[in-house]
Amino acid sequence: MLELLAVLSVSAAAGMRIALPLLIIGLLYGDGLWAQVPLLACIPPQVVLAVLVSWSLFEVFASKNRTGQRLLQSVELLFSPIVGAVLGIAVAKVTISSAWLIGLLGVVGGVLALVLQLVQMGWLYRPQSIPLWVIFAQDFLCVLLVIFAFDAPRQGGLIALLLLWLAIRSSKDWHRWYTGQAAPNQRRNPRRYKQDPD
Image (cartoon, rainbow, N blue to C red; front, side, top):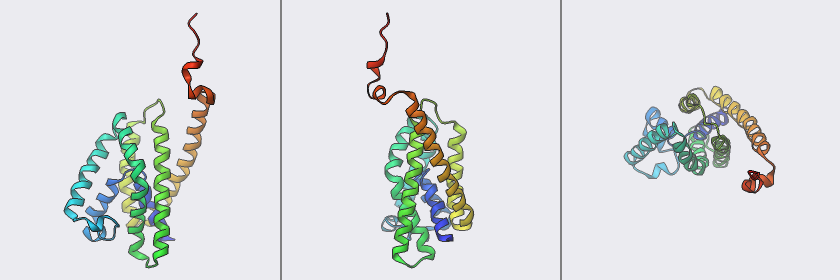
């Protein structure tokens, strides 16, 4: 159970940022843990570090304005399930030897990261911009979840489950807002339903 909670914790971090969790793992737990990460194990650590530092800085700064958020969200939506699965496998490999169970936890991690990213993208395209304090909270929570995955998996897993619950509730609110804007035929071609100025 602790292994599952650890995987949920680190995958939730990947659902908010993709490079930052990998960078934190390398900085706090050494290159030895990077060797457990699929894909990264095949790349020299110096190259991995340079790429992760560059992209992490881009994530931190680009996420603070609306244009950067949209660009970042498009990339993260594509790569977050991959990073979530990769991080889930890396964390599971530390304590689990069963290959099928490691693969299953990797799938769970990828799905969780994708769900969190999808909900974030839904809220990003609302007219109101996301408050800046929420973006800073995401950065802080992302780092915290990675640390909890290794040092306090129970707490990290519970936070990840809470985030999943909030994401489900948030997606319902987002869908209710979207469907309440106009009838479906009006959303497809809003110009048809504008009143003539007479």
